[in-house]
Length: 87
Image (cartoon, rainbow, N blue to C red; front, side, top):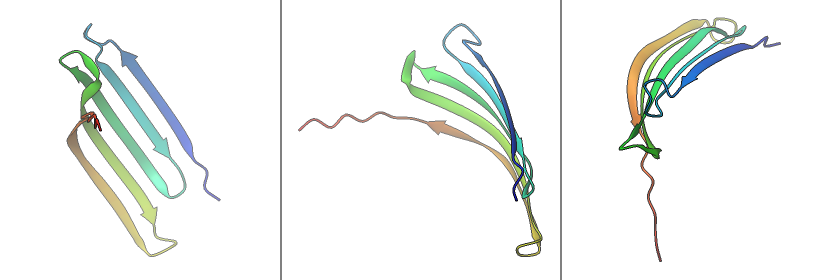
């Protein structure tokens, strides 16, 4: 049985130019803890081309299945590009 709990909160239009700040957290029997903080900024005012800056940490307990624990943390940038193909 996997008892999973999640929580999230966010602020839209943070700096007045459609930026977003979101926080997500979760925990379960296999995931000791997990969180992500995401700041999203539309590039050139276009909401279809956002730039995301993400800070995250995950901690998993796999000792029952395979005898190890896993912890990962870091940050990354993600940029979404819309490509139109006209034939």
